[in-house]
Length: 256
Length: 162
Image (cartoon, rainbow over all chains, first blue to last red; front, side, top):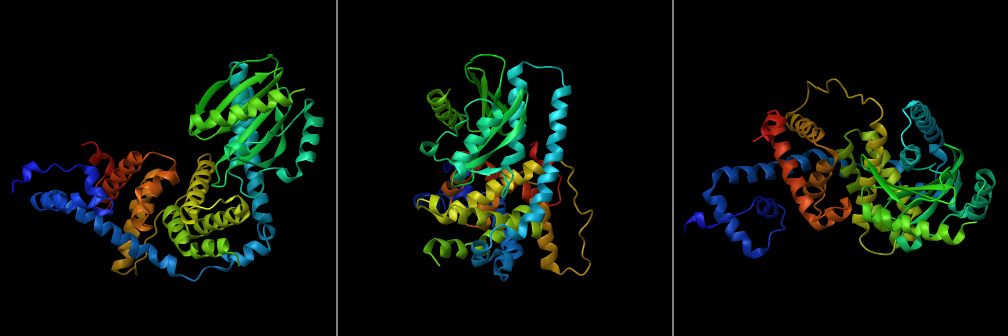
């Protein structure tokens, strides 16, 4: 057999060691490795690496589970034991965010929709990392949430129903906006993916949607009859547009 | 206890192992597991069947990503040295692999651990990270090359130029 005829890709070497290689290719890879000691050594080093990982971390899985991670405990007394720590964390986040707000004000004035979107993205980043206190009013108090935000913001705030996109309302809060108060709603998928809808008054009338991406966060801005909206989420642009479209469609229907 | 809760409970040891390797610090790791469990239990009614195991890894991976994002604004304090002179051979080796892992970027570390430590398939990891399988494979290849270089005591940045 002439090994030159066997062509094996880098991906196949990995697939071989991870048990992802189609059975019919195994013999080819083995023949190739027999003829290429350097690659064989590399593959061997991956095996050794896996052994080191297991030697180091399997004992964590074998430790007794700490009391605080017991399911019964988590189900029976949610939150209580974490309030102190969470409140401290929240304070730290607010302090950090406050600096962000001020810095924005001092920056050379970019187009209004840009700074508007940045404000929304700041709020998004500040609160999506919150596990226990992401919102002031939870989504199950929908009527109260909408009435409160409507009263404070000065336009009809309706939390859109995003079930069709797999998102459930976590709740909302009131924030300082560029031209008065801003409403801030958070949605979440079962896997923990979070989207936020930020809205505040904006001098312009209506605009089309504008997309921006900052680090790993995407945001879509548009204005509709004097209210600016920003839907923020992850880096998946299509997913973000789908969510924003659902929000847009409903604000259209519900708008005052 | 419901079947759902039993399935979640059965995953706790593996989640702790993954979190420890991912976050390095034991307390941070258990915080991540705790937040994952709280979120999973809260979403019990939202869970529409499917693979609970993958779902839990997804939540934990997302939470860690969010945590790191919030840390990115603050200076990160790492221990200056964590030498333990009494360490036996295996412990020293454990430190080496820990150090090597800590040099990986987030996505690569996650892929490496999910495949090599937790035994997930490329398909499952692709779903967890929300990327195509090809991306998982290139992240895995880069992570392995990087860890190997770190274990060999080379400067990974130099080696990767080749």
